[in-house]
Length: 129
Ligand SMILES: [Zn+2]
Ligand SMILES: [Zn+2]
Image (tube, rainbow, N blue to C red):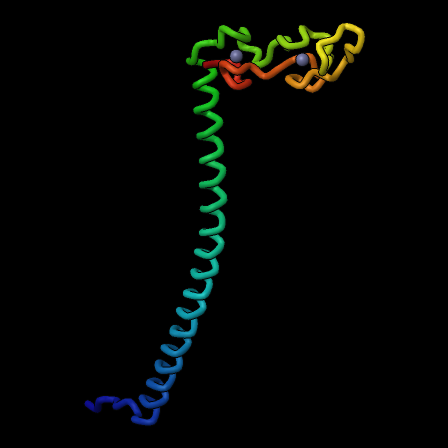
């Protein structure tokens, strides 16, 4: 019985095929690494964006919670603003440098700048303390 011996040349060609295959695999791995780097780069961007969004939503949630659980501001009844106390809602103040009734000038109220409302000083305009 004769054993069939594989031709050495054929073995060499097989080895070279394997070598080339390995090289191909290395190249593929490199490509995968590149792709992973790109992915992670994009992922990092995505992550930073996501964290920013998360921080923003957390801030929003805490703000909502504060709004929900905090006591309503008693000074402005939760509105955050109240009618200007200096001009009493007329948006101007009568002001005279000489305290002379003859030269009384109506001036735009320095507290509310003519908006007739001023930000609540108790809650700083948030509506809750
Ligand atoms: Zn207030
Ligand atoms: Zn005013």
